[in-house]
Length: 191
Image (cartoon, rainbow, N blue to C red; front, side, top):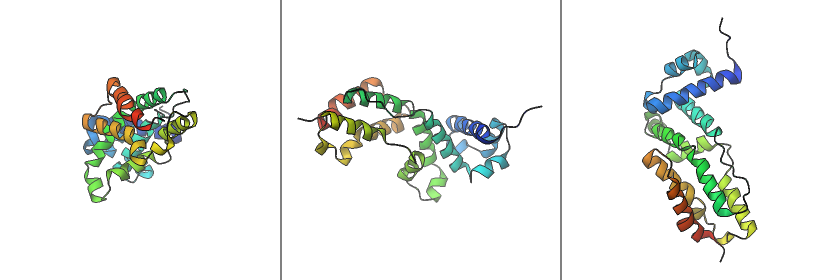
């Protein structure tokens, strides 16, 4: 006799199954039935937890993102911390590709949602580790606080997101180093 899963174990199995379906088939091919079958449960069980497949897809992406935390400990040097942050972000690149398939779906056109709305749903409750990295760098005297304007502070994340969406893969290490060394650091370093 197979023991029934409940609570967190069942939810974990469902979210793992939804993630695999999303990666293999994209949002257009994601069905509640396929997720239920893959996770060994029933469609009504899924329907009690999520209103529809868009909410399930978002939950699955958030679940995967949780496996790859972005927080970087104090390494004593801004460059090292930025490169580690981008490395950690690279582990999440497949989630960006999966999220992109949601943006092209009819759900988002009907709901008149924007990519920023989806980003907000995916990042809900997450800390912003890049802010902590930059704050430490200011405190160490590596960065001029006046240079940390909104376009500058989001630059590395914007470059990363653009590359991941355009290529469905994380940027190579050499490109990440070029972003940090030739673009970002010259913009923020204290004189």
